[in-house]
Length: 323
Image 1 (tube, helix red, strand yellow):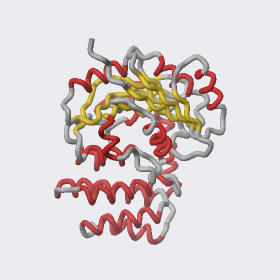
Image 2 (cartoon, rainbow, N blue to C red):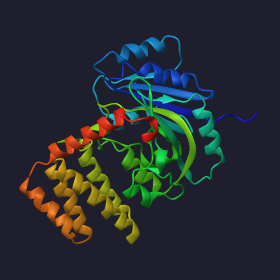
Image 3 (cartoon, rainbow, N blue to C red):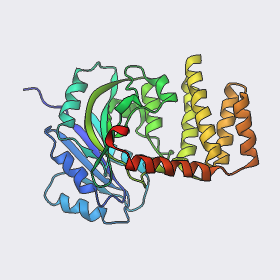
């Protein structure tokens, strides 16, 4: 009988006392048997550590407790250097794996070409109480691109990060996540897709929680460190690009980031994005107007915040099919 490939699952926890047990249990309940589970608590200030230790009493997995908060990228790399799996899953401690996710993803990966470095699937979004909200590829809001997706990833966020399974070789080539960044997915997508193919599995294999205090919900808030990280990734893209079509995709990304930086009151980041755009091409009139508004430092963030609140209110009261 052919030996099953080892899959390493990193469960990264920071103040997820309410959910971490369910996340860990979803790994332990998998129909796939050859799993290496590494749980990392990134100096949680709630009762997460106790919850993890309670499960640890009856199960075999590695628990890394970090006495100081280091952030997702460093926490992931601490787990990666201790792991041995052929395939890697980055699991947030508030998400849940469907029971046969790993079995299905391994089978899919093993049938893919050797050039495939990352696979991803659809996900079902749930609220804090586990009630269904939507799924990622509903109503064609997102298109699941496959193959050489480098150019698409520059201008379009279409992959639900919690759904990914990554080949170990990819992370070894990249030396793990970039620890200088405040978040990991955009940078990982760009650097990995330059040399590796992506494949899509059209099944909902992960339950992803939508929480108001999540990292993604803080995007474009004032002084958000994620925004500067996006700028750093855009600089990397400029150096990695090989064609004019890829440069156009980057300019499209920069236009988006400039607009959102200006209207969220992140003046310094807007200035950096504008300068990077200028290195590639002269500013069109729309961006010159945004640059002027940025120089005047007119605070439009209250309008953006109001819009976001209205969107959340509509979604909260909308039926499932609305999403």
